[in-house]
Length: 282
Ligand code: GUN
Image (tube, rainbow, N blue to C red; front, side, top):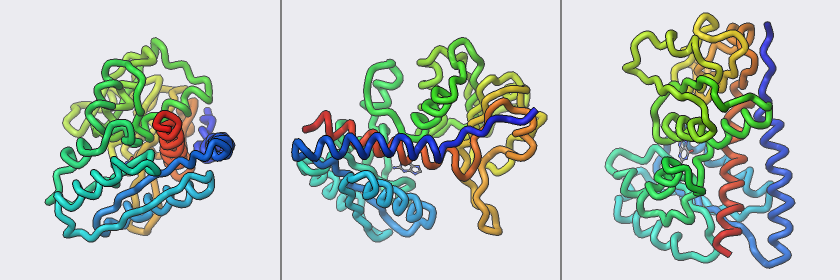
């Protein structure tokens, strides 16, 4: 069996086209959605992500402003900056790139962003809405995963979904979204014993562990949908996911590639959240 490839890149392009159209419509009402991205320090992966976000914004007509701060920026300096962005009329979305340097309390920073401009969906108010199944800003990567399942008409209701990874950015929110769609959800993590006993049962398998080649073909149920959220850099510089793509694509029914799967969808959903935030605030 050879899995269908879930083409995140093509899907993201379609979404971006639609966003561009809506941004043009807003321009007629003199509204220009604006995103402020804050990057503290020199983490190389974060720099690449932030550049990708800037480029994507400019392509769809969203005004983006990246504030690059040195590694030794203090927590109070960052809080002051965010307070200014919270009250700016031209900024509809605020994203503080994670991870932050160790001397800064990330939770405190996230809580300082007004929930209405929290385009990451990380503020406790937005997380709470997700838990309660209320409308709110949804985190970009999990939202992208859900959109891919829906676009490819992969059934979720009543299916067994297994999420590997329990991060606040991906694992926990994607599990909640799948639960909201009536899947039966298990969350596995680094302390889970006999991981493959869970994965082999999964109709939908979301790999977000950050471990290259963690998911081998013998761990996957034939015909399953496998969504690979991993972004791992090998010593030779090659980008790979958490899934052994070549092997698993012989067993799975659907699979996302890395690169070209979840990554582009994350950015597309960030643009979507920024657009929606501008519509709500203006
Ligand atoms: N670092 C890795 N992924 C993300 C993300 O989705 N948002 C932010 N703010 N930082 C990240």
